[in-house]
Length: 463
Image (cartoon, rainbow, N blue to C red; front, side, top):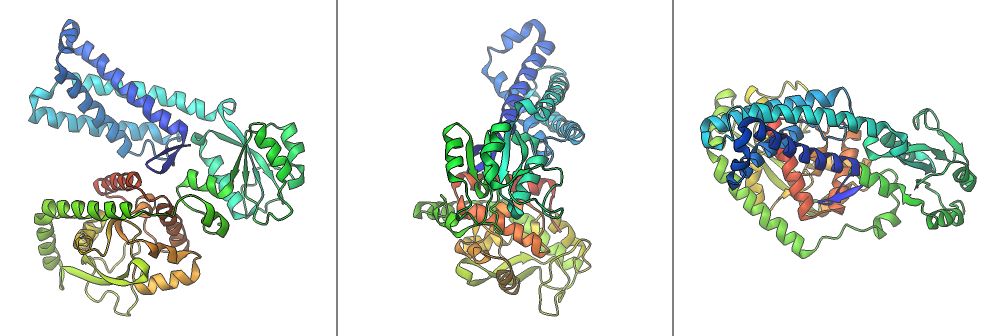
């Protein structure tokens, strides 16, 4: 795994992105020679040509990214990836055409966009087939076994087996045999914990992932140490879960791991940066979108009776409530019973205007005033109403750790998963939030902001 912006990416995905960026550049150079012929060498003496090529290349790369062609759930899917890439390139072609229409001087040559983007599509689609072949090759994968059992072991087995881009082939596991409800029946049982040395001698492995819960007098320390000195990577299961999923396994975390693992340390400089950047981003956003906010307020009042702004108590830092502001998206007294019920698909409480506001997350824009007042950061865990938070805190371990930092208008959990409606949803949300709190940094915030822009542009995840 490669760590960028405090987020871990599979080496194969990073290599894929880098190599496809190079292929895009090669395709654009080839298109330049095809369109300009003998004049191409003269054109490259003009530095502006490189800027024009970079514009087309970055547009194509961003559109492919926005089509989720690099998403972990899609990147290895032979059936879905080609259509996503074609969709992305089609949008790129439209954007480039509009720019060329508005600014004709940006065009490299007649027909350049069509030829260049077509070449990009041919090269990338062919290259993805090579990537799929590499992913499916066992000879190019690192062999691994899981030492132990329990929910964490079964989760890691499913993660490895469903994500070939990790470059890991799971040989099997050692320990108590898993039941049908615990893990994938296809995962091989290799024997007991005590059989570790014998199993590795018969089946050479390059990585051992330790998921044992009760390790007293059971962990084969001598065998693990001997294997480590011989070049086998020994990795704590919680660490492996963190780097491959971007979450922390709350059901399997040991307090000693939480205490001694790196992270969970926020410096005064980081807090100053978060406040400063939050003020700059919130102030800039308000200056840019205040006309739109005025139109939204008018539309809400015309669509249904009641105020345009909805105010609600939310839990902030250290569990202290504050009042959050949003555009009203539900009819008045939608929660007359007193409890703010989670929004469901096709919820009858949502107004016509509210449906569109939620789809593009525009209902959240008044929270910019909360950011300016210091109740929230721009990036942080999502704040929830007090009764929901207190109820979840009683049912989910470590839930109150979300309150150690200020909440945010967007966050790691918001961009990684959809709307939370069930206890399981909120447990997974907490795993993402704990990852963010543990790895909080400028780079991670920038990654989240970039992902948020993608979500807003595509209208994903809203209810």
